[in-house]
Image 1 (tube, rainbow, N blue to C red):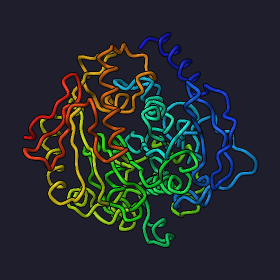
Image 2: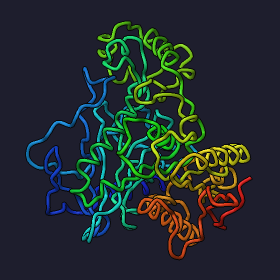
Image 3: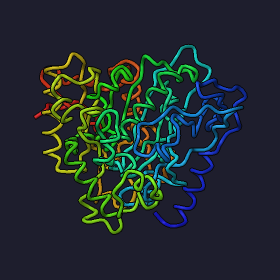
Image 4: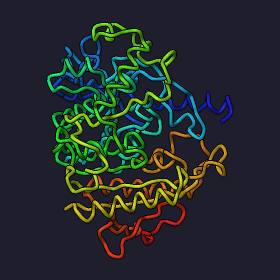
Amino acid sequence: MTTSCRRLLAASLTLLASSGIASAQAIKTRGGDVVGVHGTSADVLVFRGIPYAAPPVGEGRWAAPEPAVPWAGVLHADRFGPSCMQNIVTERKPWTYEFMAHGAISEDCLYLNVWTTRPRAARQPVYVFLHGGGFNEGSGSVPAYDGEGLARKGLVVVTINYRLGAFGFLAHPELTKSSPHHTSGNYGLLDQIAALQWVRDNIAAFGGDPTRVTIAGQSAGGISVLQLMTSPMAKGLFHRAIVESGLLAVKTPALTDAERDGLRWSEGKGVTTLAAMRALGAIEVATRVGLPNPNALGFRPIADGFVLPDEVSARAAGGRDNNVPVLIGANLDEGAKDQQRVTLTEWAQKRAASSRSKTFTYFWTHPMPGPDRAKYGAFHTSEVPYAMNTLYMSDRPFTDADRRIADLMSSYWANFAKSGDPNGVGLPLWPAATDQPARIMHIGDDTQAVLMR
């Protein structure tokens, strides 16, 4: 992408992000009244930067999120809240501008965004998207996650921020000692659960149906979905699950192993007590400069015995998860495709054999146009703008074929969110993994169900 194109895209995305005039009617939430703005047309309303929890600062750093502090007057939800602490990168090919977080970062970052349509004859299914980024980057305000594309297909769309890196997933003996649950880490997952509780309590005011909530996520977000499926704390907060590229690395370390990493982290920072750790500046917590083997200190969810009772991949395919319909898949060019297919097929078949709910599997095959298309092909994350129907948030040279695929894929996603089944009128038949012979849906230039093998 050239510098001029990048500037033009950034300007157009900024215009989209702040487009519309304020809606006249305030929405009443438990935290207070909220006024949104119109989307690109008057029938879409957007509410940006709604706090779903209190700022996790001071004593709230490395603690479970507390309820949002109610506000006086009306909250004008016309700007995204800050993204959680991370390193902001404009692009990292194959991921260009539309796949990256932009703007301000802050430790005060627990905000969500809602897209809805009007008028509504009845409450709409809810689609809560959990962003990717390796549990160290990302945001609910990433351009490719814009909710208007799916809102136009009959969903109320929610995107969220959750704590990242050391803020979200640091385990440490001092934190465990101070915890009423005798555990530490997984603060980012607790944020996700708090956001789902906010959805349960407030989404009806935005036209959403709290009894039809789909959680969806890609990469780290997909892994989060798998983990929320196993968490007793999340049970009942969602009713369907979409996992995009979430089987890449679902194994989780044990608490004792994560605590050892936490000790190495605090020693590298030159602090030993919890008070000293919480006194560190946010930038100092976020940076890995000076740490021993910084690349080896991975901050990610752990099997803490509280949020996640035990190792996730064993539970998710063992019939003991939160029993909901699942749509799960992988991309052709995000790894060894044969291994991806085997992993996906084995997981789906194990779950299908033990779960009462249907499982649908897919393989994304369409090479995304843009820089080095031949090199990157159907790369990791490239399906997201198609699944969320957000090609309009990118300046890639999309064709009518791309728009057709986006309409088809997002229709599958919307149908699944509505009923737990992606099938619908005018769409190629997508068999469940329990159907015989077992088949997997290839989605792309030639969308069809093919035999699992």
